[in-house]
Length: 310
Ligand code: ING
Ligand code: ZN
Image 1 (tube, rainbow, N blue to C red):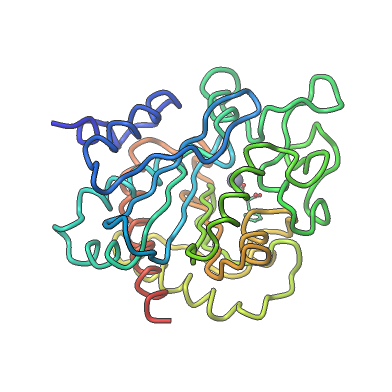
Image 2 (image 1 turned 90 degrees about the vertical axis):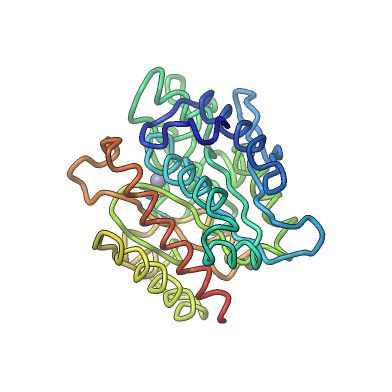
C-alpha cells in the first residue's frame, strides 16, 4: 500500500508531513505525477509543486492551483491536498475525472508561503505573511498577496511593515512570490486557469482586486464562477457568493490574480475564499476538511467543464 492512501486527509499537517505526502504521492502515481522545484523561501526552504499529467508528450492547456499563500488559512493547503488525491485516485475510474485529465494538465502548489506556514505550527497560529526582515525591528514579513507587480501598493495595501497587508519594499520583493510569478509567466502559453485558495468567507472571485471597475472579460470569468459554484453547492448545499474581488470582499492591490490575469494573460484567474462564514474562521475544525475537499473538487470539475466549452 502507498503512503498516499495512508495519509490522513481529515487532519491538518505540518510542512514536513506535507512534503512527505508529496513524495509518497509521486511514488504511488509515478506515471501521473512529477514534483518540481518552483520556488524557494526567505528562510531557505525549497518550495515544491506537482504536475499531474496523463501524457508527457502533447502540450495540453493547464489549470494551476495553489494553497497556503497566507499562513494561517490552514483549510487552503488541506483542501488542495485532498483535491490532488481525488484527481489521482479517480483517474481511469471516474469518467469525469478521466475526461478532465485527458484535456488538462494540472499544477498544484500545496503550500505557497512555507516559512509562514511553519511559523503557524511553531510560534503563532494566526500568522499571515512571509517571514522576511523589514526595516522595522520586531516587524516581519510582507503580504504575499499584496506583493505582485499589479498596481503595487495602491489601495487596500499597507506601506507599514508592521501591518498584515504590508506590500513589501517593492513589487516581487518576496522571493517566494517572484519565483512563482516567473514560472507562471514562463508557462503562460499553456496555463489557462489560475486558482488561488484562501479562507475564509465562502467566495469565488475574479479580477479586479485593485479597483471596483470590472475587466472586459468579467462576464466570461464570472460565468466560470457560477459553473464552479453550481457544482459545489450540489453536494452539501454550501452557499458561496461570486463576483469581482473589489466588490465581493474589498479593494486590494498587488494580488496574485490581478497579475496572472493582466500580465500573464491567464483568463480564468480566480481567488477563492473557502469555508466557513466566520463561525470558526481560520480555526476551521478538521472535521470540515474532507467536506471542503469534496465540494471544492466538484467546483474545480465544474469549472474545467465550463472552460472546455468556451
Ligand atoms: N483574503 C484575500 C486577501 O488577500 C483577496 C482576499 C483575494 C484580495 C484576492 C485580493 C485578491 O486579503 C484573505 N482572507 O486573505
Ligand atoms: Zn488569504
